[in-house]
Length: 349
Ligand code: 6CS
Image (cartoon, rainbow, N blue to C red; front, side, top):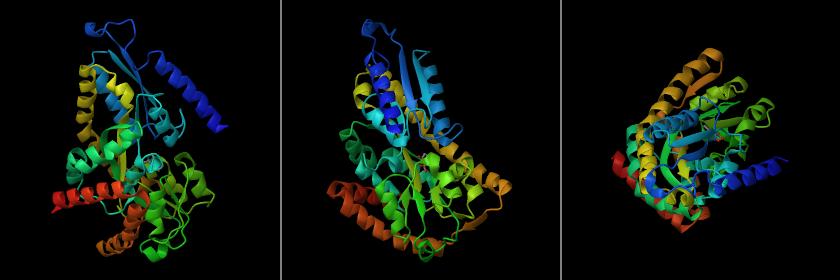
């Protein structure tokens, strides 16, 4: 039934795109500069989340820059399907823009699963900001893989470090043994937790709370803002500050749509994306910073901070997932990962 509804939505959205939304109206001469544009922008989270604030800022900046010629309609998760379905609709041109997270789209662009690997990036967000902006591995090599799947990445960015919630202590890989861990859909996230001995299983975001409540799953990973706003702390005993990896995401567009835009409008989009780079870091820092206090106030969940030695033990165990990535994703993916590791090492030396 859910699939049927999504299919119907897709038909409606693709139909709307074909009759003019997001494209130059047939009757408007390109040279007059009188065209107006109505674009749809889907994201994977709820109102007030990091993605929601980011997309609202995109809307505010570009509508103002264009003097009202561009209008953005925002679709939060659930309105046109789950995160993976939204990405598929973007690929098909049914929407113009979307926040597309690798954690939800590893089956679409397998190479993007390098973001599932733990201890890949720096703990210093300023250095990560430089890497996301200038990395050849990401902006050229990985983006080419997205383009092969009809997704054009405009920016790679993070929503913050991943922390763990669970019903039992998870301070050593031994304690992870057999844990029914919830992950996003990408297979390599499962591999990352299998490297610790866990028994991970993908569950859609909107079903995680009930899964934890009913004890169908015993733990999950997410940035603090998500743990707070989705209220996972209400149904978990431990919050372990592991910062094992970053929740990575992308701002993406449909390349056929984007290439069909006049050059000045394309530039306006790219300028807006550039203006949003520092903003994305600010909102994740603000929301994640405030979330820990809110969680402490609202619950008696036990908060555990991993020591440097404990993190080193997880880092050593995570090597198995790096080998798995290379074996599963193949030579191109391995080359992207090697290049990224080299760039991160250069940036952090
Ligand atoms: O865990 C998830 O599935 C989700 N987490 C966040 C922070 N954003 C969207 C994603 O689907």
